[in-house]
Image (cartoon, rainbow, N blue to C red):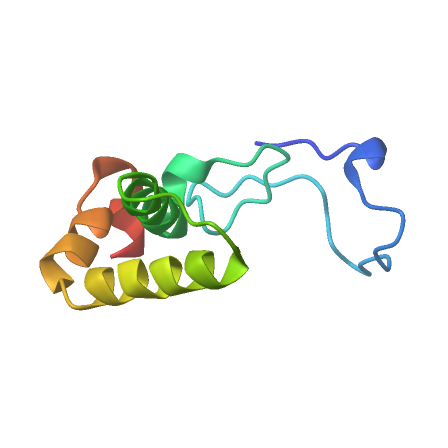
Length: 97
C-alpha cells in the first residue's frame, strides 16, 4: 500500500477528481508510487544501452555530431531484436513482456 502526500503533487497539475492516493494494488503497473523505480521500466534499459554506446566512441564535438551518433546507435539497437528482447527478460521487468 502506498500513501501519497500533499507535498508530492506538482502545484501546476490540475486536481484529479475521484483519484485516491491510497492504493492496495499488487501489480506494479496499477499502483501509484511516490518513488520512481527505473529498474522496473524497460525504457531505462534502452537509455542505459544508448548511453553506453555513445560513450564508447569518439566524443561528439557539436550538436550535429551528437545527433548523428545518437541516431546511429539507436538504429544499431533497432537492428538487433535479440538485444531489445533482452531488456524484457530481466527478472525485474518480466511483467512488461
